[in-house]
Length: 579
Figure 1 (cartoon, helix red, strand yellow):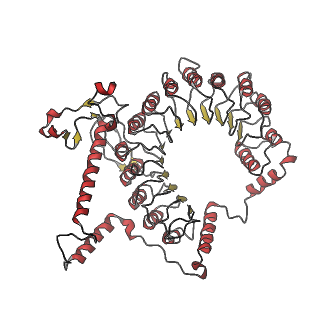
Figure 2 (cartoon, one colour; figure 1 turned 60 degrees about the vertical axis):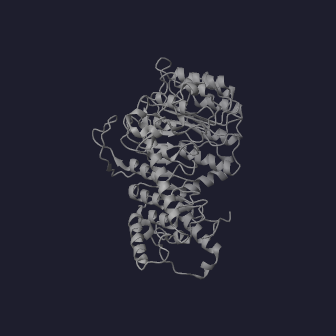
């Protein structure tokens, strides 16, 4: 019924759900509007600064595709123009000139792999792969020959853990490492848990609680909380974290918890989670729940009330919810108060109730300007309409991590507009250090998107930057570098994106994931490795059957300071994957 009343509104072309500056463009301002467009922009669309930018980008891409199609129609099967009919004496010269222009515009075309001395084992595919695997282990410090002193101590303790009565003054990191090794060797049991949860520890971090009973957890909580427990992190806690444990926490005379992370607690009911939040809100600033399938509206109400300025006046800094069955109404309750005003990190992954409206409302409730991390991955309902809200919340320019993986409804035009400078009414694009655009629609993440994201991330903040004027700001290059962690797996990026990263993030890039990017080549990756400094430590190329030994054995980091390349073992060079 609403669409019939507002027939002029086109939500599919709009991205201003969170920006209150939309207006209907009338066709009377130009005679060219008779065909329904003005300068290629639809007069029937609901317009705002972000939408206008996106529509111009779409019009530009359409024009470029038409030009490419026209050139293809004019060329014959061998790439020669039909109208010539025969070879011209200057064809080869023209071809060389055009090729030289391409090489100047695409410097990765000039990259050549280092020549290697052939050996008898080069004819053996698996011998070459074993040699490359040895380099990978050396790069990651897992040579398998001489363990570190720390590894030897951990292995010795785990091997004789049945004889360990107490760990004493041992830090959280060491206890977590011991717990991981105990789980890996099948020695994690009730007795081992009692040793890890001895009185006096400030953080209880158990990576796998499947062997811990609820009674044992109640006993541990009753001892640890009065002794000053500050953080509780339990994974696979379905068996041990239920109503009894919640009652033990709520009834404890002293509660100084500032961090709570619970995963897989299938016994945790919605009402129990609400009472847990109510009892710990004065000190609890970090909340994380994963795969807790009984959480619901009571939990959301408790956060909205007890962290508001009118409730318990708690200060919530981190909120992470993943694979939790919250509805849209429940999420909107979180934004009904100022409970989220001080958030620095927000993660909402794989939640059915997350859509553009919910994201806009939640981000609108974050008014402190301190947001540093956003993760909205694996939410099928999100579209380009959520992007203006993400950019709007970055008022102070502190957003450094953005993860939008597996959002199939994002488009290239929307992402390009998101990273475009000088859109009136919106802050400048974020200077990201971590960017995850993996497994989006293949055409959504292209070279233009990567270029704009890299430029925005490496730009130098201009003094006196205007947030809401249309004046162009001169953008410089920051001496601190640009992107550090980039995941653009399953996208349509080419070697051009590698050139953009090499130009803007050569001093900062540490990890790159280009899994299932079929348009990247040996030259692009080789050029990137040559240009980046030694901080680049890992490249993931799973599913890239086009990457050959020209890069794997020819890049500049082969012999000294080896580079870890993941995803090469079961793939023959120049052939399809044999995985």
